[in-house]
Image (cartoon, rainbow, N blue to C red; front, top):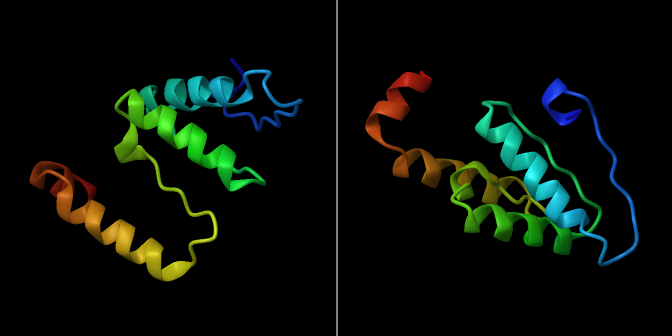
Length: 94
C-alpha cells in the first residue's frame, strides 16, 4: 500500500464510489502502524464522514477536525486532549 510507504495520495471520484471508506481504511492502517497522517479534503462533509468512521472503530483520540475552526479551537482541543491523556502517556511525550 502506497500510504504505508509514506507516499502522498490524491483520491478523486464521483459520489458513492467508496472514497470515504477507502480513506478511512488507509488512515486506520497507517495509524495502527505508528505513522502520522494528514488527511485534507476540500469539503467539511468528507472530513466529518471519515472522522465518524474512525470514531466508530476506536480511533477518535487520533483525530482532530480543523475545518473552518481557526487557532482558538485548536488550542482548546489540544489542551483538553492533554488533560484527558493518561499520566503515563503525558510524561512519555515530554
